Image 1 (cartoon, rainbow, N blue to C red):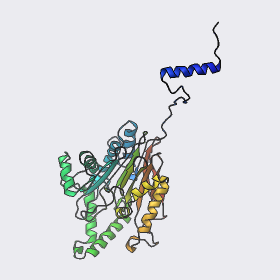
Image 2: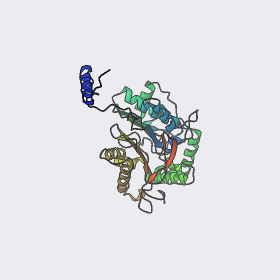
Image 3: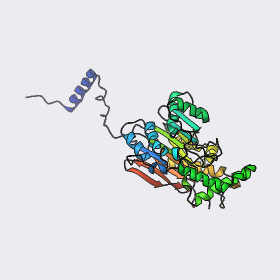
Length: 371
């Protein structure tokens, strides 16, 4: 008959066995239990991220989310997503279909940040390349720089093997530009101030008449994502302000304005009036506020209040004394918490385990900018 071990002797024997085997788990440490990651994969973007579709009928946020959950690098997934919008001739705010500058030339901007690698790349005022986000990626990978602009950016793209086209303007964009030119009068060049005012009036009137997409007069898609490992990246790409002064650069390609990513904290990017965002470096402000413990929504609202407080010129305020333009932020933190916030109500796109969605934004002000 075998002798029964007492509980005390059994524990002692187990301890000796642990010492003999070198195992620490048996010496008082609780057994390791594998649990699902607390970080849930997520992609957030401007509303057009759930509008344009590729040949398979997949939208930007859906494509990016699918690639992320299949193990792709987060930045590669986001770029593949925004490429769908960049190549869509019907989207007049980004890439190939983007509206031109005042001279009828399409000039594109893009920036991206890779959280884990702590690297970034951007291009501004690049002409002839349909996917500026891919050129920005090459800037990040192949150079020691963060930003290339204008002719230099185009030469770099050509050297990297990108096809350079004479002018990206589509017939749809050309017809809208010609209508804008007709309304502003070709003789206005004699008075620069009158020229600017005429251009703004025509652009605003065309938006109110539905000839321009009111949500994308300023252009742009920002798209940010996080995977189950907590790796965060972001990308912003745009054709910029419709009928802008040639050479004008807004916030989109500027780190800290149109996009900012910190892998330990989160990401924020924007669409809307770039000059207002540039003045506040609001994407950087949002990420830094989250670093101090703020939730995405609260950090975004803080940035919007800063923009509103900095808008003191009469020409930039409506009859209620509020900004007569919109700025929208798309925000996520390292816990996969997210928010879409704006000066005025609009929408944003999201994709998570529930699939691609277009959701209402959290607005600082009620009504519309021009009221």
